[in-house]
Image (tube, rainbow, N blue to C red):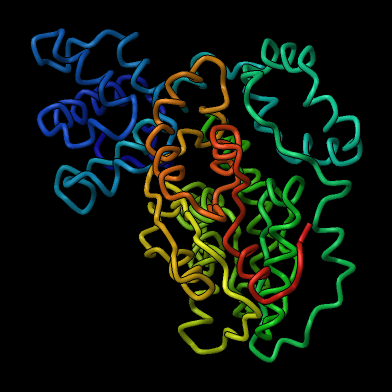
Length: 419
């Protein structure tokens, strides 16, 4: 069913899905433009070639492998010459997401996947026991048990949990009067529980330019549920997030998100997940953090009183930021504080939990190879990326700490460390 919607009766029907997969796979096989993007496409093309170039002859196992190898980087969508509004209406990431939803409906969701999607429960519990949790993540025996229980490879660098969720800190914070307006900070689950220094830097930078910051985090955006096939849980989280934001959005406040996967989720997935005017209003009001700060710069309300220039910066462009088609806003902002910013336009191979898992570890490392090579060849003094998962992959492979661009802006202003 071409261009099917989540609200169509046939969307979760296996026969309808299989017909659509054959149609799309045939178009992709004839084109092959996305061959170098991710492991799904080599697997697809090799399988079709084994069947005399007929997608209809693919086995269920071969189709399943293509779906399993898709980690929702979204790169193929804009790369595809046939995505909507083309008459063929090919949306490969959406088709793979649909396949995982049907798969979950037929087979259920494995326990490790269900547990891994519970970002708020795990985050709150990990903050309460941050000392023990952070120490446990460095213990080899515990990591081996975690790998067997959750599928997360023992070599993956786990995030460091804060002593409390950032929202509690922000609720106690006395913000500026807001002569240049107010913004709602939707921290994302990663920043909320593991990366408060990014949120602190965001608050400092925005307040310095007269933007008051409201706390906007009520729940994880739901992307882990959607990517794992838990449709109703994804909708539940989306509804909770929208309900917490909509009154202020109706009053004209923007929603600012310091994480590209989450800003993509609010902008692109919520309208279809919920199908409501409120969801569409929140989507229209959402901006990625770099996008919002760039708007301040374009309106000449972003203060330029930087205390110092930074050295050479390697800036990694996340896939989910490219998918939003908003330009390279963080790259341009870093140009305000450094005369030498090197763009690293390559996938980290993580995207959710796919690249963390032992099952896909070696393939994810191959995907990340070009990113690692470009960062190392740049010989930067600092490394920046908007994506916290890409930052962990960069740390794992290069030993370099990668921070959100807003952290470097705060440093250039002279605000000191945000940690």
